[in-house]
Length: 222
Image (cartoon, rainbow, N blue to C red):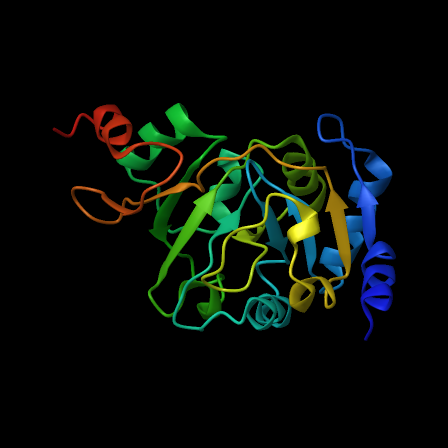
């Protein structure tokens, strides 16, 4: 496929969306694709994400294939509200409630014990699932309309740099997408901080947008 053909292929899937007040018709298009097992790209806080219905195993497999991600690496999910946690996690420890109240929506992913309804492919067989509630208006509108968890992994080949500008989106991913919500260049910054609250004390699995010191201060761990 020539560069011109590639660009045409991507343009047919890409829709420019208002980053502050996303158009309902575009959100509806994206939700339709998700509900029919498709994979989309959408904006999160500082990187574009690769979204699929987190409870659809075939759709999740597509995400792994696109990213060339080993099945030994878990993938986190996004939810629309705190009440949505009940459908994806076994319990919500006090430490998690503290972090949720202080940092959600925002740049922290919390690792919980996963409910049996969560596909093993997402947890990499660990029985744990990372969950985040995003703050970007497009992601929030998408989740609100879809009314279920979607994958929250970054739109890049595994171990490559995340994509904050769709001009940098790898065609190995773009060529297999069902739809792209283009909110323009996203603000730079770190990915989410990942905290495992199934352990006592909680453990920082990945440093990111919220510092470990800030998290431990909130939990009164010194």
